[in-house]
Image (cartoon, rainbow, N blue to C red):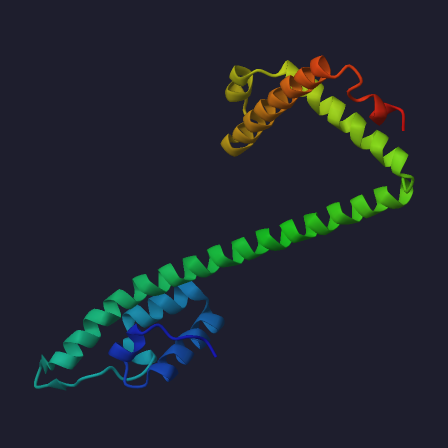
Length: 186
Protein backbone atom coordinates (compact mmCIF):
# COMPACT_ATOMS: atom_id res chain seq x y z
CA UNK A 1 0.00 0.00 0.00
CA UNK A 2 1.24 3.47 -0.82
CA UNK A 3 2.10 5.84 1.97
CA UNK A 4 -0.39 8.70 2.19
CA UNK A 5 0.71 12.29 2.61
CA UNK A 6 -0.57 13.56 5.98
CA UNK A 7 -2.37 16.38 4.18
CA UNK A 8 -5.11 14.00 2.98
CA UNK A 9 -6.30 13.50 6.55
CA UNK A 10 -6.82 17.25 6.95
CA UNK A 11 -8.82 17.53 3.74
CA UNK A 12 -10.99 14.47 3.23
CA UNK A 13 -13.27 12.53 5.51
CA UNK A 14 -11.92 9.26 4.11
CA UNK A 15 -8.29 9.98 3.18
CA UNK A 16 -7.43 6.42 2.08
CA UNK A 17 -10.22 6.36 -0.50
CA UNK A 18 -9.32 9.87 -1.68
CA UNK A 19 -5.71 8.85 -2.29
CA UNK A 20 -6.81 5.65 -4.00
CA UNK A 21 -9.18 7.58 -6.28
CA UNK A 22 -6.44 10.08 -7.14
CA UNK A 23 -4.04 7.28 -8.09
CA UNK A 24 -6.77 5.69 -10.24
CA UNK A 25 -7.41 9.02 -11.97
CA UNK A 26 -3.69 9.39 -12.65
CA UNK A 27 -3.49 5.90 -14.09
CA UNK A 28 -6.57 6.43 -16.23
CA UNK A 29 -6.12 9.98 -17.50
CA UNK A 30 -2.47 10.80 -16.81
CA UNK A 31 -0.91 12.99 -14.14
CA UNK A 32 -1.58 16.41 -15.71
CA UNK A 33 -5.22 15.70 -16.67
CA UNK A 34 -6.00 14.15 -13.29
CA UNK A 35 -4.55 17.19 -11.54
CA UNK A 36 -6.71 19.55 -13.64
CA UNK A 37 -9.81 17.45 -12.99
CA UNK A 38 -9.23 17.43 -9.24
CA UNK A 39 -8.50 21.18 -9.19
CA UNK A 40 -11.83 21.84 -10.90
CA UNK A 41 -13.83 19.45 -8.75
CA UNK A 42 -12.33 18.26 -5.46
CA UNK A 43 -15.42 16.14 -4.81
CA UNK A 44 -14.12 13.61 -7.36
CA UNK A 45 -11.91 12.29 -4.58
CA UNK A 46 -14.55 12.28 -1.85
CA UNK A 47 -16.24 14.51 0.68
CA UNK A 48 -14.19 17.20 2.35
CA UNK A 49 -14.00 17.70 6.12
CA UNK A 50 -16.35 20.21 7.68
CA UNK A 51 -19.64 21.40 6.31
CA UNK A 52 -21.12 24.45 4.69
CA UNK A 53 -24.13 26.02 6.44
CA UNK A 54 -26.19 28.74 4.76
CA UNK A 55 -23.37 29.92 2.50
CA UNK A 56 -20.68 30.01 5.21
CA UNK A 57 -17.94 27.45 5.78
CA UNK A 58 -17.17 26.00 9.16
CA UNK A 59 -13.64 26.29 10.48
CA UNK A 60 -12.91 22.67 9.56
CA UNK A 61 -14.07 23.28 5.96
CA UNK A 62 -11.87 26.39 5.73
CA UNK A 63 -8.86 24.41 6.97
CA UNK A 64 -9.66 21.64 4.48
CA UNK A 65 -9.81 24.13 1.59
CA UNK A 66 -6.48 25.71 2.58
CA UNK A 67 -4.89 22.27 2.86
CA UNK A 68 -6.38 21.30 -0.53
CA UNK A 69 -4.70 24.30 -2.19
CA UNK A 70 -1.36 23.15 -0.75
CA UNK A 71 -1.95 19.55 -1.81
CA UNK A 72 -1.18 20.21 -5.49
CA UNK A 73 2.22 21.68 -4.66
CA UNK A 74 3.03 18.88 -2.26
CA UNK A 75 2.03 16.21 -4.80
CA UNK A 76 4.13 17.88 -7.50
CA UNK A 77 7.17 17.96 -5.19
CA UNK A 78 6.49 14.35 -4.21
CA UNK A 79 6.39 13.28 -7.90
CA UNK A 80 9.65 15.16 -8.59
CA UNK A 81 11.30 13.43 -5.65
CA UNK A 82 10.02 10.06 -6.88
CA UNK A 83 11.56 10.77 -10.30
CA UNK A 84 14.87 11.80 -8.71
CA UNK A 85 14.85 8.68 -6.58
CA UNK A 86 14.22 6.54 -9.65
CA UNK A 87 17.07 8.31 -11.47
CA UNK A 88 19.45 7.67 -8.57
CA UNK A 89 18.38 4.03 -8.39
CA UNK A 90 19.09 3.69 -12.12
CA UNK A 91 22.54 5.25 -11.67
CA UNK A 92 23.30 2.95 -8.74
CA UNK A 93 22.26 -0.06 -10.80
CA UNK A 94 24.40 1.12 -13.74
CA UNK A 95 27.38 1.52 -11.39
CA UNK A 96 26.77 -1.96 -9.98
CA UNK A 97 26.72 -3.38 -13.52
CA UNK A 98 29.97 -1.55 -14.30
CA UNK A 99 31.51 -2.94 -11.11
CA UNK A 100 30.44 -6.47 -12.01
CA UNK A 101 31.96 -6.03 -15.48
CA UNK A 102 35.22 -4.69 -14.00
CA UNK A 103 35.40 -7.56 -11.50
CA UNK A 104 34.74 -10.04 -14.28
CA UNK A 105 37.46 -8.42 -16.41
CA UNK A 106 39.88 -8.64 -13.51
CA UNK A 107 38.99 -12.29 -12.93
CA UNK A 108 39.52 -13.00 -16.64
CA UNK A 109 42.88 -11.22 -16.49
CA UNK A 110 43.90 -13.35 -13.53
CA UNK A 111 42.81 -16.52 -15.36
CA UNK A 112 44.69 -15.52 -18.49
CA UNK A 113 47.79 -14.41 -16.63
CA UNK A 114 47.73 -16.94 -13.86
CA UNK A 115 51.51 -16.89 -13.56
CA UNK A 116 52.34 -14.25 -10.93
CA UNK A 117 55.32 -13.05 -12.96
CA UNK A 118 53.12 -12.15 -15.96
CA UNK A 119 50.62 -10.35 -13.76
CA UNK A 120 53.45 -8.51 -12.02
CA UNK A 121 54.85 -7.44 -15.40
CA UNK A 122 51.48 -6.12 -16.53
CA UNK A 123 51.03 -4.18 -13.30
CA UNK A 124 54.61 -2.88 -13.46
CA UNK A 125 54.04 -1.64 -17.00
CA UNK A 126 50.85 0.13 -15.96
CA UNK A 127 52.61 1.73 -12.98
CA UNK A 128 55.46 2.91 -15.21
CA UNK A 129 53.02 4.44 -17.71
CA UNK A 130 51.20 6.26 -14.92
CA UNK A 131 54.51 7.45 -13.45
CA UNK A 132 55.58 8.86 -16.84
CA UNK A 133 52.24 10.62 -17.19
CA UNK A 134 52.51 12.09 -13.69
CA UNK A 135 56.06 13.35 -14.31
CA UNK A 136 54.98 15.14 -17.49
CA UNK A 137 51.95 16.76 -15.86
CA UNK A 138 52.22 19.89 -13.76
CA UNK A 139 49.85 21.22 -11.13
CA UNK A 140 49.03 24.15 -13.36
CA UNK A 141 48.26 21.88 -16.34
CA UNK A 142 46.04 19.65 -14.24
CA UNK A 143 44.08 22.62 -12.85
CA UNK A 144 43.68 24.12 -16.35
CA UNK A 145 42.37 20.88 -17.85
CA UNK A 146 38.72 20.24 -18.75
CA UNK A 147 38.37 17.45 -16.20
CA UNK A 148 35.82 17.42 -13.40
CA UNK A 149 36.93 19.11 -10.19
CA UNK A 150 37.02 15.89 -8.17
CA UNK A 151 39.13 14.18 -10.86
CA UNK A 152 41.54 17.15 -10.84
CA UNK A 153 41.92 16.90 -7.07
CA UNK A 154 42.48 13.15 -7.36
CA UNK A 155 45.21 13.69 -9.96
CA UNK A 156 46.88 16.36 -7.83
CA UNK A 157 46.92 14.03 -4.83
CA UNK A 158 48.31 11.17 -6.96
CA UNK A 159 51.01 13.44 -8.39
CA UNK A 160 51.99 14.66 -4.91
CA UNK A 161 52.06 11.08 -3.59
CA UNK A 162 54.17 10.00 -6.59
CA UNK A 163 56.67 12.80 -6.04
CA UNK A 164 56.98 11.96 -2.34
CA UNK A 165 57.57 8.28 -3.12
CA UNK A 166 60.11 9.19 -5.81
CA UNK A 167 62.08 11.35 -3.34
CA UNK A 168 61.92 8.53 -0.76
CA UNK A 169 63.21 6.00 -3.30
CA UNK A 170 66.07 8.34 -4.23
CA UNK A 171 66.97 8.79 -0.55
CA UNK A 172 66.88 5.01 -0.03
CA UNK A 173 68.97 4.46 -3.17
CA UNK A 174 71.57 6.99 -1.98
CA UNK A 175 71.70 5.35 1.42
CA UNK A 176 71.74 1.73 0.20
CA UNK A 177 73.36 1.00 -3.19
CA UNK A 178 71.80 -2.52 -3.29
CA UNK A 179 68.28 -1.05 -2.97
CA UNK A 180 65.79 -2.70 -5.35
CA UNK A 181 68.22 -5.26 -6.71
CA UNK A 182 66.39 -8.19 -5.09
CA UNK A 183 63.11 -7.15 -6.75
CA UNK A 184 64.52 -7.34 -10.27
CA UNK A 185 66.45 -10.56 -9.63
CA UNK A 186 63.29 -12.58 -8.89
